[in-house]
Length: 186
Image (cartoon, rainbow, N blue to C red; front, side, top):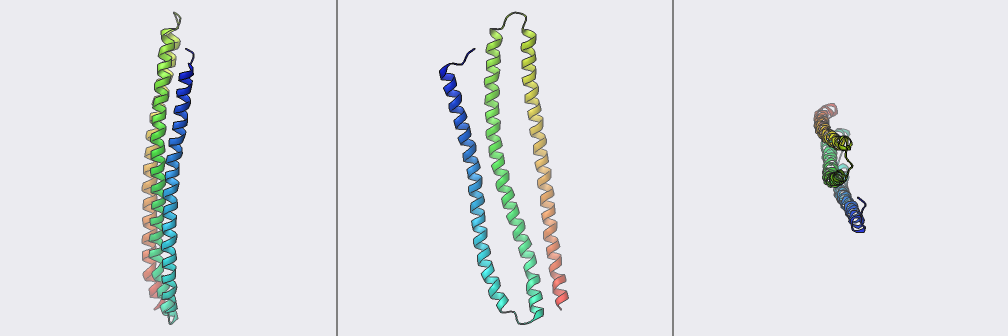
C-alpha cells in the first residue's frame, strides 16, 4: 500500500512532464498571438502610410467626407477579422490544454482506481460497503466531470455563435453607414 521510491519518482516525472506539456501549449498560443499582432501592426503601418498619401490628395470638403466614409467599412471588417483570429487562437490553445488536462485526469483516475482495487484486495472482511461507496463516489465524480465538460462545450458553441452574429451585424452597420455618409457629403 505504501509507495516505493520508484513509484514516487515516476509520479514526480509524470508531474514535471505534464507541467512542461501545459507550458508548451500555452507558449504556442502566445507565440501565435504575437505573430498575429506583428503582422497586424505591419499591415496597419503600411495602410496608414497609404491612407495619409491619399488624404494629401483630397482637394475639398466633399472629397474629405467621402474619403472618411470609405474608411469605415474596411476598418470594421479588419477589426472583426482580428477579433476572430484572436478568438481562434484562444480557442485552439484552450482546446489543446483541455485535451492535455483530460488525458492527465484519465491517467489520475486510472491510478486511483488501481490503488482502490489494490486496497480492496487487502481490506478486512466487512469493509465491502465502504469500498463500494468509494467506487460509487469515483464514478459519480467522473460522471459529473463529463456533464460539466459537455455543458462547457455547449456554452462555448453558443458564445461563438453569438459573437459571430454580433460581429456580422457590426460589419453590416458599418457598410450601411458608408452610403449614408457619402449622401450627406453630396
